[in-house]
Length: 279
Image 1: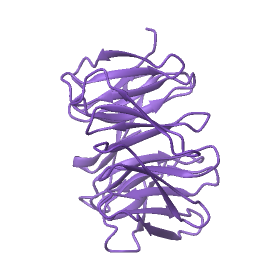
Image 2: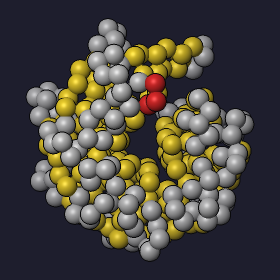
Image 3: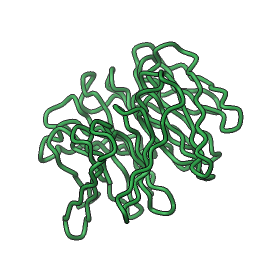
Image 4: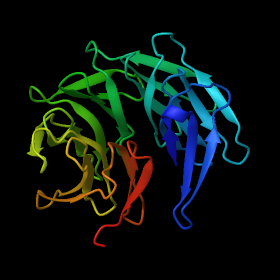
């Protein structure tokens, strides 16, 4: 599943047949769907980045249910993720907030980020059910308490701008430093940070990131042409990289599957890519 932000659709690819199917968001002609995630029933939840709402698509009927933001300031929901309790957490980039939505009641709550213009971006949930998110507008990562919604920020070295993150099985947080060309590693228990130089250099603009079941960290460098797909081995702390055949266009997001493949959204060239490790 993927979003087609500029044409107001949700898309689906069947990897076995290569067949695409599109679902138009007819309720709002300019929703700007950005992030998406599936629930346990197979519904697709997405952030309407231009429309100021969270949407739920029922793939069987094509029906879209909208959950409007409770604040006019929160007009650009960005990335969404479910926790183990079925609560949907999301970032609001320009509105500088993190929110949560209870699908059962429809109740939505928002929390402002302490740092002004932090631009909360990527968000994931660790094994303890705690949402961790990137603050692209500053050199910080942060977490939000799932009960109190209190936000804790983790300082990063000067000049670092985290964009997306992935969390390993041991709760180590890996993030892409979009501005300074690093893969970052954060321990939220101690606050310790380690940076690794990306193979493409300081202007590599690391972006989409995911971790496969074997623990390998994958991300894309969007500042090199063609874009690359990079593999980082946490055990040996070594990198391997390959060029994306189509050029990539800017791989803003990616997802790892249970069989070890990585799906990449090549947004600049209107393609979905599949990375098959070792093939």
